[in-house]
Length: 462
Ligand SMILES: Cc1cc2nc3c(=O)[nH]c(=O)nc-3n(C[C@H](O)[C@H](O)[C@H](O)COP(=O)(O)OP(=O)(O)OC[C@H]3O[C@@H](n4cnc5c(N)ncnc54)[C@H](O)[C@@H]3O)c2cc1C
Image (cartoon, rainbow, N blue to C red):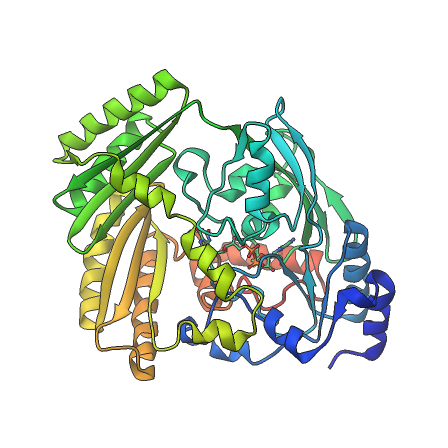
């Protein structure tokens, strides 16, 4: 249990309204969209609740909270939208959850610099709406636009629908303001590159809050495109679609959306081209020629248009039925259903061989793939899997073991186990295996920046 004096100090920093210690609030904040039914071996991480939740209103307040935590050796967990799917906000050692959503100001939109300066807790949808008034848009467009925050998406280095052209969220970061584990505030400069040592933004991209709390970000923004063209190509096999996608990128064509899906016997490549009119027309024409070269049939824009129009629906649904609700409510949505959505990355030359080996492992292990995909690049390969014999606990447990085999196979073939959602508690035990000596480098950085291990302890394999 947390010392009463710490709670009193938190009240002094943020005011009593912004300190929550009611069991109801501790429960609903102690987790994200990961349920124990998908945790596959990390179920014990759900046992501990936070001791207190604080909702600071400024970077100064965040700094004072972290300073207090450091002095008293209290764990702190940064919390954005709480929409992660790996359990990266689970307070596995209790302590303070810092909810960043009151840091929700869009400080500056600069159409000349093509940047926006925003606070950590801005929800992506609010950013989309604010930028639209300037004829601009963000480069990151995940399913979770209605619910995820800017700093949460930086800290997971998430992938979205426009990533084929603009890259993942980490590539949108120009500069950051961060509260370090000692409470000190650090800012990087808003220029596209430097040649004076490592880019310190990288320390906070995809690192799940273990090195500090992001309080402000300068991110790239893009003109709302002059022209858009949607296209869909149907293929006889996934391999043909894969080859076409790889050829498009090798030629230098950059669709904003590139999504190859194999589901219910259909293999479809969804493409969206955006930009200046002549470029869009040329990219679309040449892309459809490339698809034809690999046996792809142009089946018109409608499938992709429909898919585009529905892309945020799962998150709208989550917002209505689960966001901010008690854990029981969130978990019950998925009870009885067991599935996992794997997002692996491998060198292009290894993806199809990897798929063949997976098919064997999964079939022998009683696990079925209901969807295969590529998202934004041919290296980024996804599989949605379910247990063949239903979702009872023993089948779920078995699926966990089989999933682990295919994740480690990706590592053994020179790839990585997850390109989209981070590590959280679910993949924590596989991080050191993937990074080898590099993991020791990260461990040393963590020890020197956060000697008391207060920042989101127990995450990122640390
Ligand atoms: C319906 C649905 C659809 C989804 N679709 C996608 C998708 O298309 N693409 C995708 O990539 N993900 C998707 N996700 C997962 C999720 O939205 C992303 O992982 C998102 O990036 C998390 O953002 P968040 O603000 O909710 O962060 P949280 O879940 O609150 O936190 C995620 C991690 O970031 C850390 N963090 C949060 N704020 C800060 C901060 N200010 N400073 C330092 N660390 C911080 C947390 O400690 C945690 O480790 C989806 C989730 C749902 C529920």
